[in-house]
Length: 129
Image 1 (cartoon, rainbow, N blue to C red):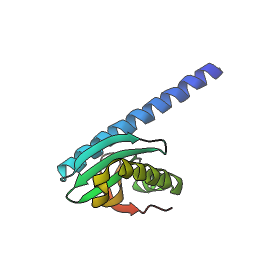
Image 2 (tube, rainbow, N blue to C red):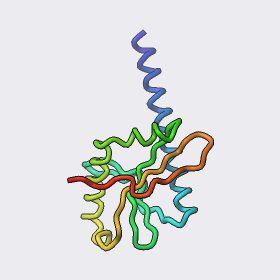
Image 3 (cartoon, one colour):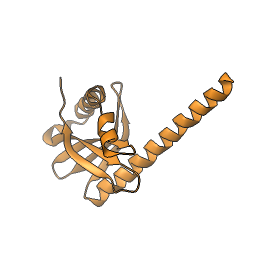
Image 4 (cartoon, rainbow, N blue to C red):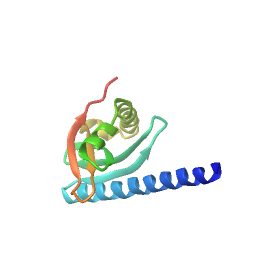
């Protein structure tokens, strides 16, 4: 019986992972259509991962993508701990890309809900030290 529960949990994780990847792809296309250039997808560091790093003009946005059934659930999923993780990863990105320091840096969220266009929340949070 325990083996069957493990398979069910594994399947749920795989579905959630696939949903997340699909949401990131949709968010990337949405950003491109609104004039952003995607610099990195799934940027991984020791501090954590940033879903998308996008640039438009003199602005670089570190974008967290959340796929949830409701807007509220998506916003609640971006916890203070995840904000800190993203900010630490962004700091690593900036340290590795000298030119990034000359841009306006911000943290956005793209919410992906069923049967709706993605919603971008500009400057959704600030980095805290």
